[in-house]
Length: 42
Image (cartoon, rainbow, N blue to C red; front, top):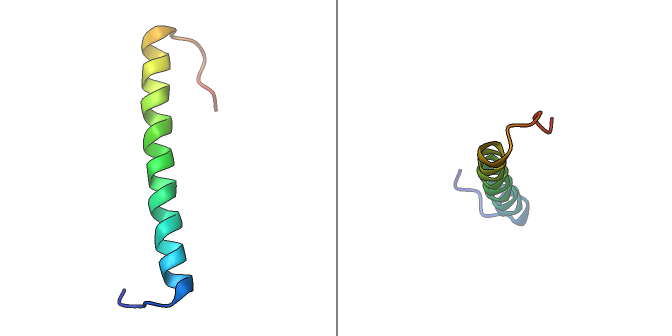
């Protein structure tokens, strides 16, 4: 984990971004489910 190469830092950043995206999607899905209990968007 102590790798400071550009590829490693890039990978870590994209993983953080992906996690944030998933969190945002979950929040949106929860809010949408509260508003209108329709069929899930999967």
